[in-house]
Image (cartoon, rainbow, N blue to C red):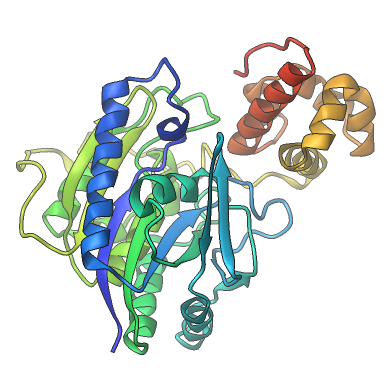
Length: 379
């Protein structure tokens, strides 16, 4: 009978791969060291397959279809980011069994033969999997395009994964990639909810899972913690009620968390702290504030941004002929003006998704640089 023999959760911040000079190198190294410790534990557990529960930074599915959960069932998992690349075998028998078994268990999961795997998968491949001879199964959770799956649904998906694994012969590891508090592409980028993160960590270390399952998608959005949905999938699959902190780094813009669920050591990574519920965070309850479903009016702009992000050829044409390329997408004059500012805030004001706007503008900066064209810094 199969079983989940190893489970953990890790940060996947792109700065771990790009190492920009403005980052605190000691904090980056602390996160990478903790991820390497996970990797050593993974090697010791020696599972037959590793499920990586990652997410889509509005790069794989939007604006076509955004599934709540999706599993990659193709032969290979190819991930690339910032000059790093991995091409790992997918455990297809397990992937297909999970797709079938989850449906039979009442979980409506989508599947795809292939999907772009960005830094949410790249970072754990680099620092946790590390090229070990362990085939993987990539699973996507929608955490940035409301309406989001609920916390309880994510936890139920994890438990359903464990049930499917139990019906099979494989020994399986599961790694959640995501978190903690951060707000990329928004005005709150340099104001993460660190105290909320510390409350989440203590709730996990002391086994109070229910308090996390009571959180809503709107509350996760407010605290910059929608990526915790991936953690809840892995926690549900692990069958444990508590976790061990390996590292928490409050960087200038992102709470880096690394925790171990299995094997349990009965130890804490930090001493108990007296703290208010939610770390003292006061919810406004005004709906999704930072990552909203783009409006129908913003659809042409969304199409243009997604196409520019995915196509180097299109970006090369765009930086030389902005009006011509914008005309191909039927953008309004206001949309074109916002694009010409190279400003994330201006695009968000036009209805664009913050992460899509930011990542597209960063890609356009590279294309402009390659063409010898100077443009303003993305803001």
